[in-house]
Every structure is written in C-alpha cells, then in structure tokens.
Length: 334
Image (tube, rainbow, N blue to C red; front, side, top):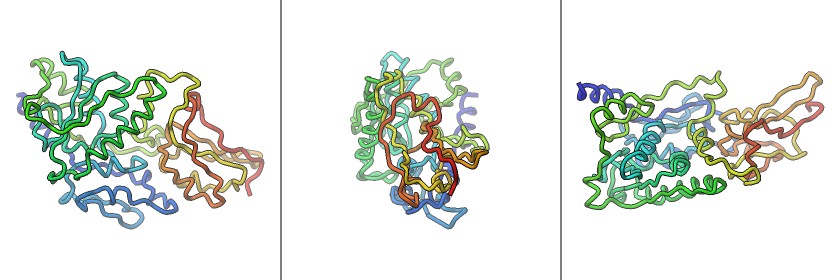
C-alpha cells in the first residue's frame, strides 16, 4: 500500500516551473524588458517569445534545476516552496535538531532537491525564523549536468539576501553551504511507520523516500488580490519573526515618488504584482498607493516612469507593512 501511495505521488510531479504571465515584465511591457530567466538557464531551456507567450520552457531541455526561478525578480516563474519549507521545519523536531537539504546528484542522504538552485531567500529566512541550523550540501557542480558550475556562488548570494532580511529580527539564519562528504551518503531523516503516513498527507506532502516532490501548482486566480503576490514574497514577509522592533529598518526595496510625477498610469500598469494601485477620486484627483508586502522590488515602475519621478528606497519601518502607503495624492489628473 505504501509503495502505491509513493508511486501515485511520483506520477503527479511536475518538473517544470509554473509561469504566471501577468507577473512577467515582458508581458507587462516594462521599459527595458527582462531576460533574467533566459540568462540564468544553463541549458537553453528558457525561450523568450512574443507578447502572450513571453516565456516558454522546453521540457526536453529543462533539468528542473530552478536557477530561472531563483533569478526571476517578480515571481513569474515558481516552483512549490512548501515541500522544502515543511522538510526543514520537520527536521527541527528530530533528535539531531538540525536540517539538511542536498542536491540529488551529490549522492548525500536525506531530503533532496534536483539542484540547490531551487533554494531561495524565503527558504533560508524561514529557517532563521524557526531557528533551525540548516546545511546545504552540494555535489560536484562543475561536472553536474543538472545545474551550473557556479551554483555554490549563487547560493552564497541567496544567503546574503536572506541574512539582510533577518538582520532587523536580531537572529540571523544559521546556514552552512558545503560540498558533500563520504559520510553524507548515510545521512537520513528517521521516521517511524506512523510518521511516514502522516507526512504523506501534511501540507508539504514530503515523500518518505526523502525526495521533495514537485506538485503541479494551482492556477493563479488574478481576480483575488492575495494571489497576485508570489509565495516567495509572502514567505519573506512571514519570515520577519521574531518581529523587528518598531524602529528597526527592514530591508525591502520598493518605490517612492517625488513631486515631478505627472499622475500618469504607467507605474500601476507595469507593476507585475499590482502592488501599486491608482485610485481616481470623485473630485477628479488621484491617489497612488503601495502595498509594500506585495512589492517584489523589481523596480519596473522606476525603469518605466516617463518623468523619472520614481526612486528606490531600500528600507522601511515595520509599520509600513501594515497599511497601504500613500505614494502620492493630487487634486487633478493632467
């Protein structure tokens, strides 16, 4: 019976990232566009096309390494975060009290991903919020056909982003990045029979075999504002725990607007998560509002602003996440 359940899970995996077109800067026709996913892919699996089909993933070339997802500035490309998040949290409750994630080609035991290119700042920041020591164990990246030779360097950059986010909480993430060693082959997360069945049906749906399965992500309902924010940025916000002091600046790049604004709709139009909204008032005026938690910091608004009235602000106080930020209010629209 257990084998049948595992087979069912394996057959339902999806090795390709989900593409959400409204979040793509090419689809939003942002000034300068974006080719981050194409540039990050080491296998030529990401093709850029015309409007309406801006990003295409070739199944015959994609290795599921996740480097395109890691590089995407807006969450237009995503893999499920919950399996890895659940695995890290579950391992906190083991006798060892620490977690590992490995890449499958490394040969190391324990929970593994196809490539550690799947690791994002949200995952590492969450491990810090849970106070779980986490080891990221990679194989010989220079010779690996799944990812790229510079995966360890990319991981260190991801860790730097996560640590900046953790800094105002006063509790940095305890993350080690290292190559696999001979003793890692025997590494495993121990589960009893009852725990194995429980794990199959919990939120992460982690396989007993320790592979972290990809489940096809549900369709994004763009009519639901909460769905417009990528899971990556929802978890980055949730990982601000313990709560920073009210006077502690939180690193979260987002736009501010100066008085040269001409009240045009460009910034709201190009925003890939609709974090910027433009409200016309009954008296003919306009309000420009920012939902900070939904902003991915891509700065498509800054790049596309006709009068260059938008600037990048690196840090915000915690209160800024609790209510919409008034970027600009004017009496009339030009």
